[in-house]
Amino acid sequence: QVQLAESGGGLVQAGGSLRLSCTVSGGTFGAYPVWWYRQAPGKQREMVASITRYGDTNYADSVRGRCTISRDVAWKTVYLQLDSLKLGDTAVYYCHSGGNWGQGTQVTVSS
Image 1 (cartoon, helix red, strand yellow):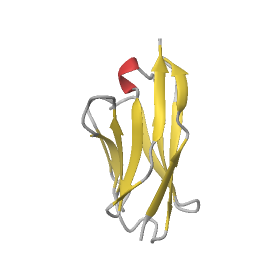
Image 2 (cartoon, rainbow, N blue to C red):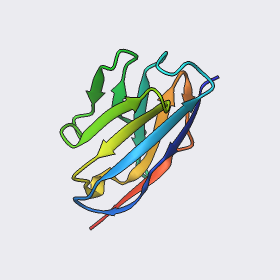
Image 3 (tube, rainbow, N blue to C red):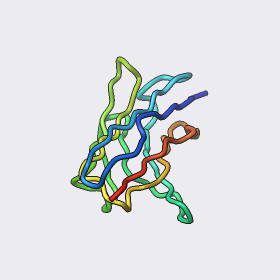
């Protein structure tokens, strides 16, 4: 069973950057696509970015141009680089793959 562990969240000022990590264990890395989702207080969980087993990427309109998803096969980790952060990016960010979710990592953007 695939297990996911996110890290890298924190408090950052608007305009700053963060790199989130999702470490994958318990399965064959790269066998499944990986998604990053986020959920802000009082809002539904929304897809932020995804990467397929072939390395193709996709982004939500709200983050396109400010966000990069990538992976390191050796470290079995998928990264989410967030740049030019806005107040509206404040949310818990979750990794999703193989039918499983991580526990999430909090990103808080301050003015």
